[in-house]
Length: 281
Image (cartoon, rainbow, N blue to C red; front, side):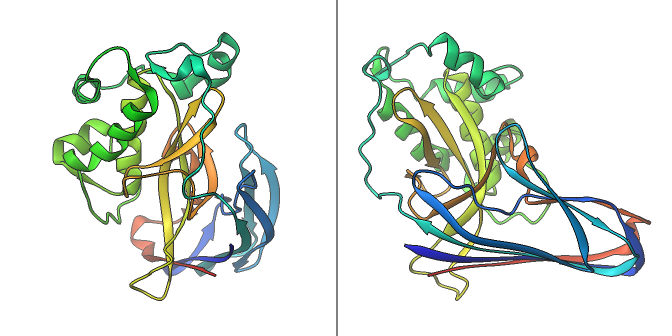
């Protein structure tokens, strides 16, 4: 299916401020199940863009501004062809069918920090261990149980504050945004020995309550030999990439925020920020 995406971010300031360079990650990632047909990015006031890719292959536009302003508008638009099946056949390597398994040495080197369990809080480790009913067990069933089980411990809530809660904090307060829920799932998966990465992008809702038909979203991907990167969306207890449009992948949500930047002025100069996203057929 073809999808149209419009992502607008607006900032209002109390007085003209000098905008610093802004790092924008708003271009969908092409892959075997998603093709980027067209894309555009514009800013008001006018910006000069420098285009690059980061170590994960994400497309980055660095916007530079040449005059003070009391407002900033960033609009990204794209048309994509999304063909991810709702019920894919996952050809997992037989050696990885049963958990626990070991990644090949070459895969483990490439995964690097994406498979590191360092600094994961003991409470998160204990919570993750509870999903392992016995050893050995079926790998995909374990991941499905973990994906479905996050909402058993955490309630979804809209959270307008910037940043991501720590997985331990999300368990402690038993609530979080989609990016908080995804971060908890990723930490638990890494503790269990899986390669996992954060994904930011858009969710298309074919039966929307509001006319927007979509929103910015955060989820996770797990690397399984043979099948590759598999999408897990613990916020909706869903697996695979149907109705998901990935923009960026990385070690953590902090590395893949759609808009990052600053200004020269005082904290009181910032009056408001609004984000409006439309994802439609």
